[in-house]
Length: 215
Image 1 (tube, rainbow, N blue to C red):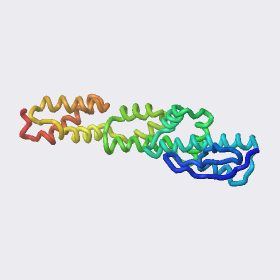
Image 2 (cartoon, rainbow, N blue to C red; image 1 turned 180 degrees about the horizontal axis):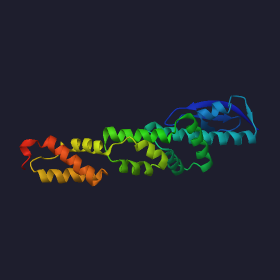
Image 3 (tube, rainbow, N blue to C red; image 1 turned 90 degrees about the horizontal axis):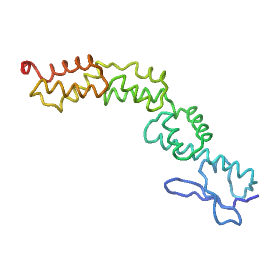
Image 4 (tube, rainbow, N blue to C red; image 1 turned 135 degrees about the vertical axis):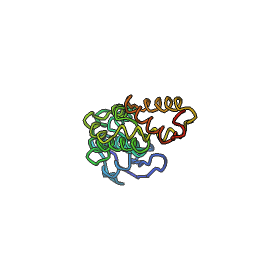
């Protein structure tokens, strides 16, 4: 049996609670959520079984806080979060329990993540449905979720938008060089032959102009 003598919140990169027991100099450090959910208060006596329960609870909150920290930087797929937690050394049972909780709370949502990824690509870095699919598969998103996310992508329009943006960096002095460089760029974006040709012709007509038609 151990008696809690004092509690101290430790400020720093990771805010934790130092739990001091009577007769012991070294504190037990736990997550703030552990102290609150575990009912740790000054004067409480804890059996060995209760201390074991506190340790398990603390590992859950450490795992959860690590996952939430990852998600605070940018949206991530469930597979991404799981991989990062495994690399951090958390156990499979801890990770599975945390992922279940985060799914229930809406912090992890592969459908929402995939939709946001596809929309972000469309708005800021247009590329083909094929390449977008590949990116999402690398993120561990299920195929059926991916297909819903990319259903609204228009390869012809995206190739044109990507081509228009990239054309600003190219010289129009030579039509053939312009077409080759723009075509190569769009193929790297995953667009197929016919879509690339259509986009290159459309962009050339707009940026090359009729005065360049014979170049």
